[in-house]
Image 1 (spheres, rainbow over the protein chains, first blue to last red):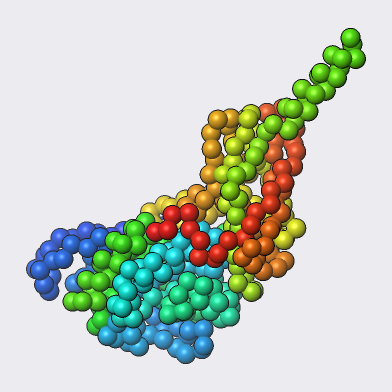
Image 2: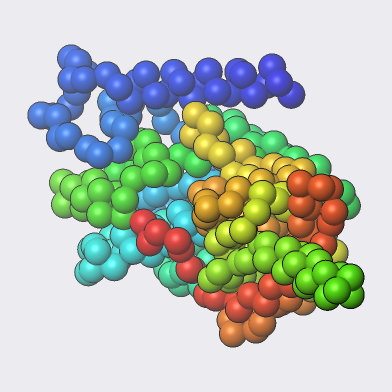
Length: 202
Length: 147
C-alpha cells in the first residue's frame, strides 16, 4: 500500500510539474494567469464512466459546452468534503447566471457507505445542480487512478467506522472537455470563480 | 479548628476538581438520512493542564478525537489518543484541524437538535473525569471559514 501511495503521489507530482510549466511552444493561446495550476496543453487527460444517483451512466462528453469541475470525496467526511462543496456553492453564487454553464461533479470514493440516496440528499444540501457519481469499488479505483487521485481506507474500531484519506484536488475541464486546471483545496471561492469564469467566457 | 481546616480543604479540592475544561461554541454538522458519520466542533479552554483522552455520545456507536492534516494535497484524517489543552490557550476544533468524530450514528442529526457529547478529561495527576457538552446541530453546509 505504501509503495502504491508513493507511486500515485509521484504521479500527482508529475501532474504538478506539468501545471508549473510556463508558456512552452505547445501553448495554444496567450497564457492567462490562473489562480489554479494550469494543466492546459493536452499532456494529461482523463475521463470517467460512472452512474449518477439516478442510475444514468455519465461521461465527460455528456457535458460538452459546459465547464466541468470534478473532485473526489465521501459524505461521511466531516471536514474537507463539506468545506469543498461549500466553496463550490459560493462559486455558483459568485458566477451568478454563468453558474448554469458550469457542472460541478462529486465522485464518491466510498461507494459502500455512500448509497445513491445518501449521495443525492447530501449534495442537494449544497446545490441541487451539483451531480454525484458513484461506481462499483472497481470502477471507483479505475477512475481515481485515471485522475491520479490517491485514497485509502483507515480502519476504525468497528467495520463501519472507517474513514478514508484522499487527494483533495479539483480538476476543471473546458467546454470542449479538455483538462485545464488543477484546483488546490485551499483556494478561496473568489479565486476559483475567477478561474472558472475565464473558462466559461473563453 | 481542625474541622474548619478540613472544610476549607474540601472546598478547595472541589474548586480544583471543577475549574478545568470548558467548551465554547460547540456544534455538530447535520447529516442526511442514511449517513453514518459526522463531526463535532468546539473551542476548548482549561484552567489547568489537561488532556482530552476520549469521548462518547448516546447518538453514536463510536466517538473519537480526530486530527485532519493536509499532506501534499492528500487529506489525512486519523484518530488521536489524546488532545492536550494547556492553561491560557484556546484549542480550536474546527474544519481543517481537529474534530470530534461521531461514527456509527444511531439517528439522523437534524438542524436544531441538541446533541450530548461527553469528553473524558485527564488531569496531570492522571485522574479522569467527564465533561458534558450539549452541542446544537448546524447546517450540513456550515463552514468555519466560508471559502
